[in-house]
Each structure stands twice: as C-alpha cells, then as structure tokens.
Amino acid sequence: MVIKFTKLLGIIKYINNITCYITILMDSKWKYNSKFICTYKMEYDFDDDDRNILYQLQLLDALELKVNNIVGPDIDETILDNRINELYEKVKNEQEIIDFMKKNPYYKSYSHDPLIIFKMLFSYDDFDKLHKIMCNIYKNSSLE
Figure 1: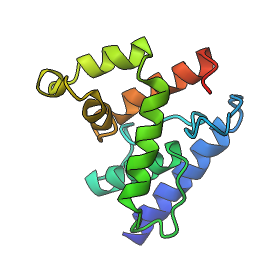
Figure 2 (figure 1 turned 180 degrees about the vertical axis):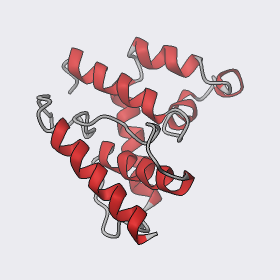
Figure 3 (figure 1 turned 90 degrees about the horizontal axis):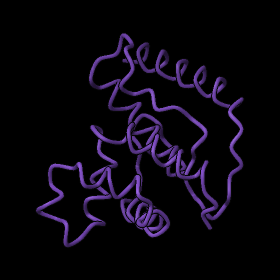
C-alpha cells in the first residue's frame, strides 16, 4: 500500500507541475480550484482504492480545502457541505450547470430541490465532468 500511495503522490506532483502552466486568474470569492485536470479516471495501473484516494484528493483540491492527513482525510462534512452550497449559489443560473443537472438520473425525483442534484454532481461518477464545466464557467465569466 505504501508503494502504491507513493506512486500516486508522484503522479499527482507530476500533474500539478504540468497544470501550473495553465494560467487562470483566481478570484478569492470563487473558492474553486480550476487550475488542474481531473485524472482519477484516467488509465493508470491503479486499483479501485487508489482511484478513490485520488478522487478524494482532487475533490478537496477543487474545493480548496486543506487536508492534514492525506492517507485518511479527516474533513468536517459541514465545511464540505457549506463550500458546495456557496458554489451552488454562484453557478445555479449557469446554463451548463442546469443542463448537466437535468441529465442526472435523479433529476425528476429531486427537481423541487436542485441543490440536492447539484451535490450529486460531486460524486465519483460525475465529478470529472462537473470539474470541466466549472472550469469552463470560471474561464468564460466574471463570477463574483
């Protein structure tokens, strides 16, 4: 497990070095890191545990949350929930977000509460697609 984790950290550092050349001005009010590429679903020699750890790290990185213990992130769920709520308020009227939410299989069941659907987009299955949309929104607008 230590060897796989070391390998995973090496790949993360490599990807971060590549993405540091991507220039996107960050607004402190935005509170979303759009300066990296989601890689947790890419074809690597990883097992499901490795991919899950990478997903969790990238999710926290995107939400600009700090992790004290990388192996077992001890994150306060309230902080995570609040950050997603803040993001929702910023992007809830963006057409790309609305369209993506409508594609969610639970949209009809929860259309009365779109925040629930938005939170579902941060799942393992959808986060990589959501991240691309969030980057696109930030890049093409002046969110404040």
